Image 1 (cartoon, one colour):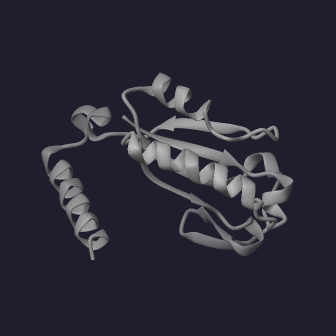
Image 2 (tube, helix red, strand yellow):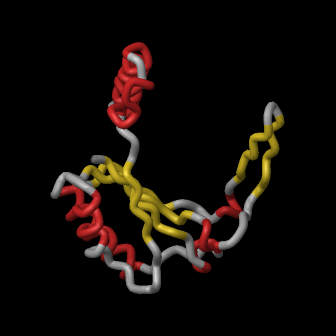
Length: 141
């Protein structure tokens, strides 16, 4: 199962203050462990919302809202995408992460094709397979 591991924003991350060298080194070691274990598929930190935008959809209307956005507790500072046997395994991995400042991490299973049952018709499954193949070929360039 794929799991999105969401690192919630903090006052520091929203202020654009990057982690220090020691914290970056600790996170690098943790990421290396994840990669060697075949768990980590992707992972990145995000710039503060002051450098981003949000698009609100209301019928045919599209409204662009420049950052910063809302309360810090509702924002994301970074993420990982992991491949785990189950959610319990992902929880055990995140417990090893080098966080100690009151961070809050959310773990959310990613929908897989089989989760949609008969609603995902053979034609739609074929379309998804084509998209996956195209993405794979683009990332190998």
